[in-house]
Every structure is written in structure tokens, then in C-alpha cells.
Image (cartoon, rainbow, N blue to C red; front, side):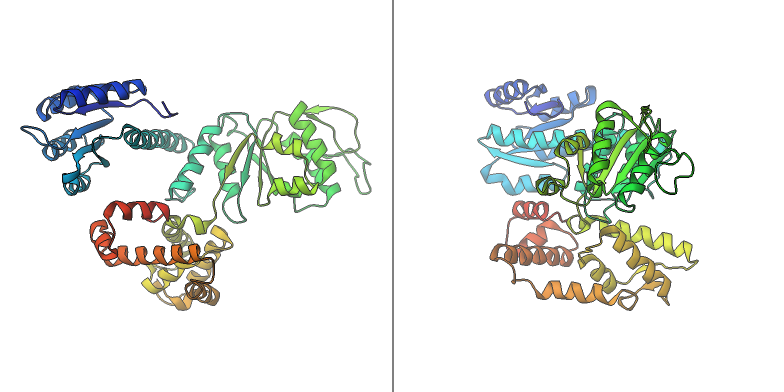
Length: 456
């Protein structure tokens, strides 16, 4: 069995041999499996026991699969259903999906294909359960919806990973372009950790020269260097019992890398200019927008330090790869800056919203934040218009449209395909069946393309 959670599955199939095959196969895969030979018995079992998933044969004597599906959803809307159907009734199976089934398989059933579908359901259920636990923990810690804004599956995985590693002592390396929210994820890890009663200390490794950075981190003794008039306590001592966030760790000078490596190995250090060995109970979280493996190849970053820092790696994708997050982020920044500037901004006009959604944001969330703040400040009306957006956002988004076809053939085709799918979904108000008809493809193919291009 794959590394998924065990599911409680009810197989509803009137054919005795087919039911046995499915039962034995799924049990061998580690799932808890029950069986029912018709819809009436299935509903009775559903009222008495809990099931994560039902496999329902569409064509059965008496109550058919569609009628059973409706009954299942009335009893428990949260249960997942996979419809089993013959090739001649695929259209009916699609209708079943509209009624609440998560997917369908055609007979004769390919067991490996069925297992893939079940693994996806198991993965989704595991993620939902972890998210529920994470939301409860965030609520207890006082973290609100305004602290973490996302809607995309990729960011959902990032936040989920942060929640899973928070309770450990493992060092965490957060990677991502500038402006993606690395410090926000670091603060989330600290907030959810047992160290949350102590503050998270932040040091930007790129902001200080080597001597001052070493003193900032480890402290110094009086007279350690010119101007060191008295002893100074460093960040490692200050953060004792808490977390130390080292931002832009890729800019750490080599001598400081050696001292950091020693701390990670021995949990001890010395102040600059001192010979007394000190200890500190601090959890290290670091972040970088650089490719550290490239820096290792160049000889500017220690490989042994990299592996000490990279016990758990979290990569935050750029905003252009998680466009689903744009709308909630735009709404969040509008509310924040409207309140700060005491202006009543109700929203964004469609033309301006279209520009904001098409722009690629090389500066990521930080750039989006600046664009919305500027728009709120200069807006003369209650709705943000194209005139309120920086000229370069409109120009660059227009350039991007005009340059379709200037890359490789594959890139050009995919860009055009993505654009056509977006337009079809907009024209049909996100009705997948009509959008598929408009595009001349099957609805199943459309679902695949929507997932491929991360569209909702």
C-alpha cells in the first residue's frame, strides 16, 4: 500500500465475483472494506457505520447507482463516491459526478487505475484532516485569517508542512524568491512550536558586514575590536529558549559559516574576542532566495553547513505559479490599506482586476502589496480603476500577451491553450461541461487541463 491513510470503504456491487475481487484487492492494499449487494443494503450500512468512500456500481437491480448516490449524499454529504460504470454509460457517470461523485471507473475495472483514484482520495482526506488540526492550533495561538492569505493547493502544502515540522527541533531551510513570504512561514513555524512563549529573533545576514554580523550573532567581549567599548550579548544568547530566523543565509561569510556549523553540531559558541564556551537552546530557521547548491559548487557556501540547515526544506513558489492566491491577497490588501488611509474602497473594476490577475509579479507578494497600497492612496473613487495601477503593470501584462509564440513551440502552444481555457471558463461562468463543448474536448480532458495549469 502507498503511504496514504487507511480508508473505510463500502463496495456496492450486485455481481458476486466482481464484489469479491474488489474486496480482496482493497483489503490487500490495507483498507477496511465492507460490501453490499444492492442500494438498499448499502444505505442501511451507511446509517449504521462510518465510511470514507463508497464504490458504487451504476447499473444494479432495484435502486440504481444514481439514486443510491443521492441517498448517500443525503445521509452523509462528506463521504466520497466513485461510480463504476460500463463503457456505454460513461455519459451517465459524468452526470453522477455532477451529483457529487468524485470520479468514475469503467468496466472492466483496471485495479491499478482504481488504486490511483483511491490514493488521491486518501491523500486529500489526510490533508483536510491535517488542515483542520492546523486551523484549530492556529486559533488557539491567536493566528487569524489575516495572517496567512492563500487559496492555492501549493501554498496549502507549504502551510501544512510548516504545521507538521513546528513541534520538532529540526532546523528548517525556507527557499523562495524575494517577496514570497519566507519570514511569514518562519513565524508560523515558531508560533505553532512549543517555543512560542519566547520571541522569534530575526537577523538579516545580508544587511551587515562580516565583523558586525559575527558580533550580532554571537556577541563580543569588551575590546574585541575597535569601538567595542563593552561586552555585548549576541542574538544566540538573546534567543535562548526561542527561535532564531537567519534570513538570506546564502550571504553568510565563510568565517561565520564555520561558527554557525559548530553551533549546529555542538550547540555551543564563543563571543567574538572571548574564550569562554557558551550554550544556547535555540531553534534555527533559515531562509534564502539563492540556490545554495550553486554556491556550494562555487566554493562560497559550505556543503556540511548546507546539510545541517537543510534537515527540513520548505520551498515557497513564486506568486506567478499560484495565481489562485491573487484574488484573496488583493482583497486583503484593499481592506488593510483602505482602513489605514481612512478611505472607503469597495473593490476593483473588472478591467483593472484583469490586469492585476495577468501580471507576473517579479517582486511577488511584496510587489502586489505595494501596487495595491499605491492604488488605494491615489484612487479618487470607491473602485480601483486601471488609471490607479502603475503604468508598468499594464504595459508588461500587454507585452506578455503579445509575446505568445516567441518561446519554444511547446511553450507557445501551452500558453495559447491556457488562455483559451481561461476564456472558455469565463464565458460559461465556470461551467465545465459547456466550457468543454466550447473548446471541443471532453470534460475529463478539461479537468486534466485545469489541474495541469493550476486553474480553478
